[in-house]
Image (cartoon, rainbow, N blue to C red; front, side, top):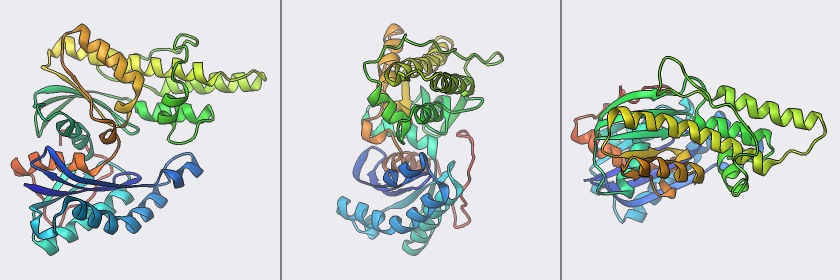
Length: 335
């Protein structure tokens, strides 16, 4: 089954053709990073306008790269939630028009389900059930994946997402957008014990996360150093900060491993590309003798291939939509 998938939840316009949920025939992304660098983050209105400008070309190129025509596509899939509402609407409405004109089924896909499915592309042998840590700029979830379309959230952030905490810390340290990516690059080899940051705890749920206090801590540290006229040791501050964020992620994941005894652990989302997280989570899972899966780096960020992968299983489960499909800015993964 060949699925044409569209992704426009944030600042990347993506289209891909995926066969049977596992084989990527093409994947095209129009990035807006260079434009948003000027503002230190994503500007929603600009993102929406650039999606409008790029989406037709990106979809045509995805079909061309796959060597297929629209007639040879079996279904159209699109990210419908969650994300920036204006950005989502561009993809959803384009997909609806395409599905209507070509008389193809329309498959709505949850963005976080897509991130988890990126591992199906990178690891064809991977099958549910497993424990998933989905960690990105907008979300931090621990999810019990019981089946391809059956999800149970067992832990989530109470405030900021881990990626948001990294991006904001990077910005206050003077690193350009995307902050988390640049922090990982600039602070590689730094002393992770040079600075102490508090490890946040959530009292009433041992699997939940909190990063707002940690983010405030690093902001205050940098501001205090600047006010005293002292140098800001970006490399060691960044290394220490990343280590603390990753410690939180690994700690909650290890608690879930101990309680739920999953067959394997899957990490997904933009922060899954972080080198510190990859190293520390590998050690955590090795200690428990449990298989660990990360997506290939090219599938860690937003892309349409992951949408096409998840769409295949949504279609098999009968989850299709009509022309009344709408974009939703916020939606739980288990809905």
